[in-house]
Image 1 (cartoon, rainbow, N blue to C red):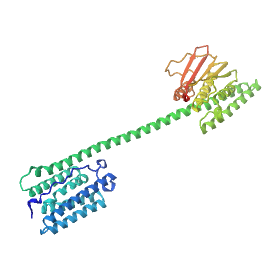
Image 2 (image 1 turned 180 degrees about the horizontal axis):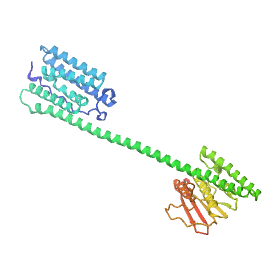
Image 3 (image 1 turned 180 degrees about the vertical axis):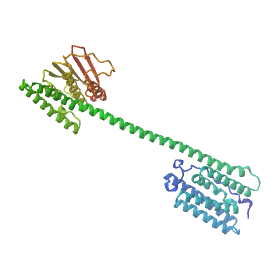
Length: 427
């Protein structure tokens, strides 16, 4: 039974935002908070439209013999839809509920066309639960049924009855598909960024490991290796003089034992925190360099130390780098230059600290800028570390290394490290 005034005004609905497309297939068990909110909104909209259509039908056709069927199907639709919201279940269960709701809705619309606009929430639900092609096919069928219902309710031909349902359905479908594809592209971009970040982190770890290995090799070279080299030279000298000059041989042995004891301290400190033993227990760089000069003044080499500028407390890394530089330079002077005297000069300024290591040995041709030849190192690649290690250590602190030498006239090595300027006092 139908009356001319049975044509309801289309509700003020819009396609609304689809569920977060980034969630892919909307498996209810994996829904996000936004997905659950949208599901609740769609369920509420469906139940409200269903209740409004049922109330209107009861008011206008309360005496119709179709009323029990309309009421019963409406109750089934509401219960299934609310139950699906309360207990989402699996994706397959959601599709089964959608099929039941669509089937019941089709029967209701055939009995009472005024229930047609309940299709709007069903369109969104279909787009969220079904694959794109299946969803488009179902949306097309729903829109067609809505058009037929509108034409049944109309007194005469109205273009809006023919155009409005397909336009609403097409708009909802188009927006949803666009947002889904855009979310997929963004998810791919996020995945690429995450993968790139992981690769970058792995690369940084590898570089950090390599840098740490290089640092440890420099520390070992400047402490243990040089001490062992000096001990080897002293023991060889003692062996040569053991029969001819026992007193000198014993002196060499005592010196070698002293170096071994210092090397043991260095090794323990290296294991503990890699700080030079001469800087342990709060000793300043000037005191450590003076101790180094006194210890290296032997076997025909005299080492003097001189400090210029204020007694500034240097950062631990800068002090350690300069002390290692002095140790490496003196070891190379002793082993390669044939010098009789050497001088360590520490100059502290407000923003810079510099260490000069000079000797009166045989000298060498000054290295070319950027060259790979190490004039301070050993020609044996398994032993020499020398200049590259010193330069790398200083570079890590923003420092520089300069070398001046002429064959037969000795050499001067200058290591410079910038210091963070002190904050000016408030006026």
